[in-house]
Length: 269
Length: 356
Image (tube, rainbow over all chains, first blue to last red; front, top):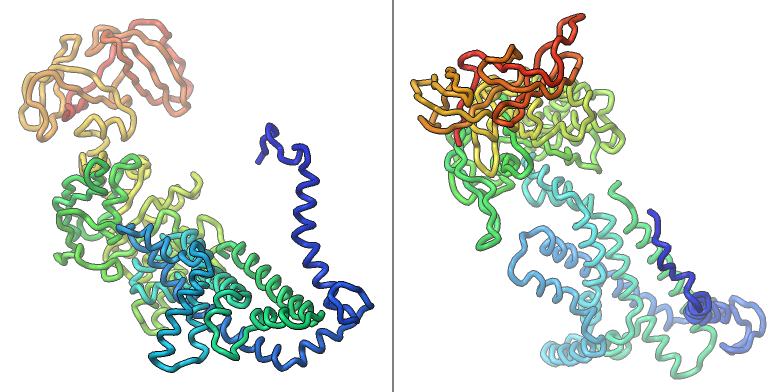
């Protein structure tokens, strides 16, 4: 398609300067972080030569190991729960005739995107405290439930987009060929929806893995995910070990986001 | 077999309400090739989808072999649909697509396999059984869609403009193919199209629809030769409309006086006018060009040679254009000249009185 030449943003004065400074601001800190994770010294600001030592030290640090395992457990459980809920929500908001208040339902599903995270965190803190007092349970489920809740909109978006892009005729054709609703879902809708589901689950996983605010408020004593552990470390001694952990997290996130992008781009076969 | 009575469908409510079907009554017989013909938005697809179960009519009744099916879900109705865009399952192979209906009915594997094989042969797609549906051409997809809908041996096959996406040659082939399949399977076909030629060549009976109503139901010849309404006459083929004065009606026969003062016998229409000013319809090929002093006189305005026939455009005394179509003979010379006075003649019973 021919683009209008009347307004080409690249010809505006200062375009190159602004674009470059944005990229520098975005990426320079991250590049520095990655570079100093290989620092041989103990400083995060003075370069003393190349070394893998901080990766080794992070790998061998039991606290980091525990925090990583906890993060992975929570992210896995939360993304599973959130994705399941998101599939159901997406079906309910795309495969039913428009009902009164469907706009409100849509807003409510996406509530975590709009309400300040700190508010949700405080609310959950108070709510779970009451449950803790009543039941005495202090386990992992508070974190899993909290993470599931705020991950739902992230899983919901790609799934809903995929459902909306799907040919409704396919489901009608399946129903016409004697398929009952549940079997149509399993045999026709789900296989078509699969890339969306995977993309949603990945996004939810990354979001859960990354969360600090809500986790910090909800976690019981001694429970640390990787981000809250790192936050705790920053209050004490800062070594390039933090850089190393951050770099690994960055690598995982980038890998998942790239996978998400590829999946969400994949055409309907 | 299919009995539809008083079927009405209104979408929306209040000011934005739209009535897609208005009191539709029709009976379709066993093993009939029945066509719903009309322009887009005439309600033909809504009627088809009501039979399939994707549209819930506002009122009326719909039975198949005496069973009320309006209360049944699409998957409980003994009908299958060939969708306009085929709606083949992109994640399944050709064979899996064809076997889908039987699979959903939990038929034994061996039976599914043998029916799929039979269907693949019926539509000449056996070599493509293991292809994905995206790897076959449009015409082949059309065959697969047909086979998929026929495989469960439904009582009624619904076809929603299934040939509209095909190119001209392929469409002609598939028209013949569809007729053959209908003969071989003995299934009732309900076919939706906006293509009048397709309707005329394939159907046992045609229902012409417009504005949510069925205007006329009849065999192709009846619909073509004796259109009941102006819309039907205009939509199917080419027609000359002539104002006339209806003098008397006796059964089928009507006596009309043309503007020239000449009287001719025309065919009347059931429930039509019995006297007064009417419009009559005459097909271009049912009229002949004669010397002036005929039923209608006029001036020859244009001669268009089409190979198989020649069209004469005549401006009548009433200042309207009348077209006559005459078949060409080998090596005949054109012996009419533009601008000369001519007459228009047609046989008694050829003109059709239209209902208003």
